[in-house]
Amino acid sequence: MRSPRIPILKLHNCLLVSIQWELDDKTALQFQEDLLNKIHVTSANGVVIDLTSIDFIDSFIAKVLGDVIDMSKLMGAKVVITGIQPAVAITLIELGIGLNDVLTAIDLEKGLEKLQQELGE
Amino acid sequence: MRSPRIPILKLHNCLLVSIQWELDDKTALQFQEDLLNKIHVTSANGVVIDLTSIDFIDSFIAKVLGDVIDMSKLMGAKVVITGIQPAVAITLIELGIGLNDVLTAIDLEKGLEKLQQELGE
View 1: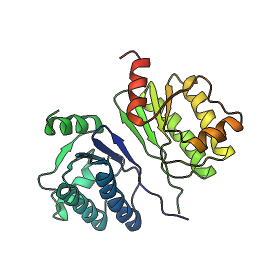
View 2: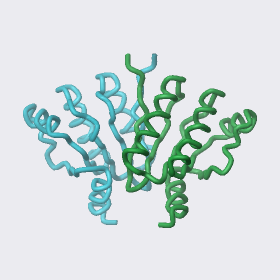
View 3: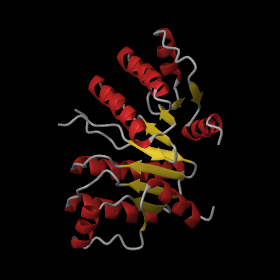
View 4: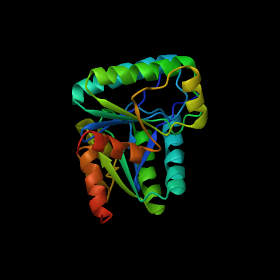
């Protein structure tokens, strides 16, 4: 069976991603590639990644997430992470992945608002 | 392996779904159940289902799609289908699934606009 891909929605100049199940390593890497491609193709200048449904994150996925944020920045897109749950926040900090300089918000709506503000719209 | 689920995003009073790969029968039925549950839990009054990435649809999936639209209506949510590709439109009409009274739009943004208009906002 083909590995499932994470859908990436385009809304105006932003991309929306909602991760709603635990990622395996292959899916996470596929997501990294897909997101960067989508930023390139759509010229999006903002990305919201919603983790509301994720209550556990392992070190590999945490690293991929940190990387994809840095890569998106390099490509010129601002990233907002939304809905980080307590256990996920604990894991990220314990792993030393503080997601420095990353915008965060409590939910998707707030994240989009924050992004629009940052982009000056 | 667990069957992949289709992520459903909540944005204000609407749910957004982007179907980005061919659905198998089990995933489609799971999606039907998930969407109806999410409408119930969030009290959403609008749903946008984006099919931009789908270039083929079989008769079972077409029926599930028609059903989920009718079911959502029963629950009080308006549905907009966006990004129907030529081949998908042909299949739907040939199968006699005209998606009567269903709002459609060319892409996700236009679909959301249409939905907000319909909901009078």
